[in-house]
Length: 375
Ligand code: CA
Image (tube, rainbow, N blue to C red; front, side, top):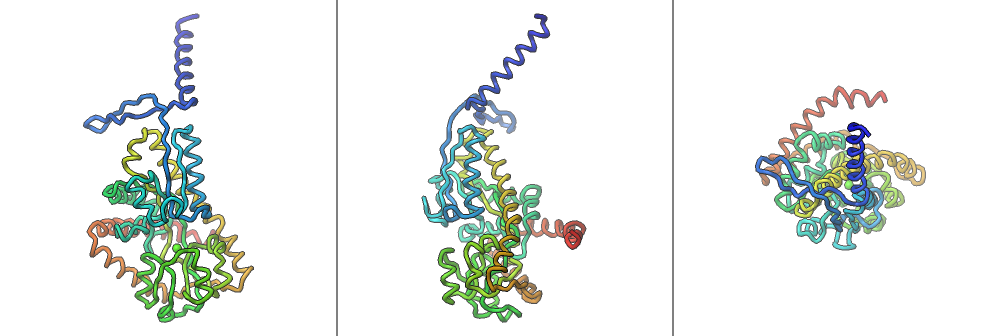
């Protein structure tokens, strides 16, 4: 055998050994021995296994949102070759839905899935990382997250509470909600009792609506019995499953209060930092895959369910009058001003959010808005 052949055989042997090691479950673990300049790390071979818990704000087996988290965990187990096993809990299975935040910051669970605006009571500026009334749509907020300062600011906020956030799903434009009264003017909202959480609730209350929150499971009965006059939920796919078309007369659009809600995967910071670099990247890449996956599922299924709603019930599809939307937009500006006046970090985030939105809207005049009427 000549020398060149020997070299080649040696190279193949080394390559096969490395590949075989990866296949048999031995991965590269970074010791995170980063030098002072922040470059370079030492990798050692490790097959350490991590068993994590992921708590979610969604009811168990919740279509799209809950299902996506389960699929994501299954996928992570496969692509990590069993090194990262995540058990997913629906809301109420390990902790109540709205205690997901506390469970992950305190480390009772390493991971959680929900929506940042649920934590507005703890961190008012969290709303900007999910959605705000008349804010950005899914494509715009994804651009702000990935190529603007959105994700960077979000990490800055969550770092203070020992969390690392990832964009992980988007509902797209939601529907305006189910009403048992026709809305022709802003005055028609006065005196209504509507289930509408978060900023949307604060905004609509300026029009004289009593905004209430209640568990999803109670909504159908409360709407049927007149305990509430209206409710928003998500969009046709979920709304159909909730059966609201059987007990409400009008289905209004657009969802001015949620133009593109970005969902979140939150990871306990210490837990994330304990992972080797390759598993950290798998978590990040998988979160971003599901960020697109969830939006695509909503977009693919909503029209099918909208047509089912309209063909299986007497519910009428209606658009909020321009006058009503314009007034709600004014109230939204007031509400956001109140938030940022009381929260310096929120002021900084909103300044960046607004600047990005103005610029992307300017581009969208020549792109999305220009082409949509023709496609
Ligand atoms: Ca909603």
